[in-house]
Length: 245
Image (cartoon, one colour):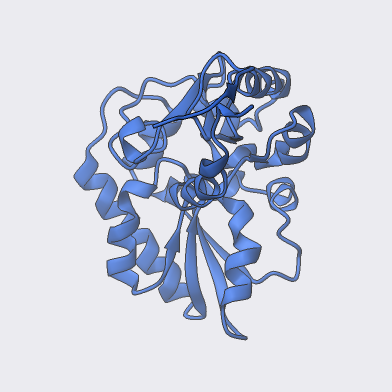
């Protein structure tokens, strides 16, 4: 129960995290970043019109930066404490989006890769699972602060038939069981091809529903955007307003 005098200034309160979400129609199950039931705390969404998955991932988000900047500023005005995005490939705009607002911005789970790598013993690398490996390039690594000397191995689901097709082609139906099998298969291939992988980071914000399956199949720690959102939320929740006057 609140007591004493408090100070306003925002239209809404209680949102630690604002999420810039792509312009999609594909199904988002619990665990997906775009399903609000994924989080045990309220999040605030801002849909970026025209930000189709194919445009963001396969075509480099060409021309979309102004729309994402506008969205970030709108979320800031609505009182969120930090801002993230609904696609790990937007890490290429990490610097620009962080400079556009005064609250913290974390565009992608790829930002965790240097941190996770430092947790591992010498000789171990971070495995990255992505929705589309050929589209994940140097500009994304640079945006995430992944230096050339950070050992990584990348595996994508573009070789499979269900998950990447549904996500990037923005289709209306997803076979969750097939998608789960694909994630497990690609994870196993990743560690078989690179036995020195010591932990896995999931790039795609639609992958967290399958994180537990990947952990079980590989025996490795798995980190994703939900891990990162939860971490940032913990750093902000005590500062939620209204604050004492």
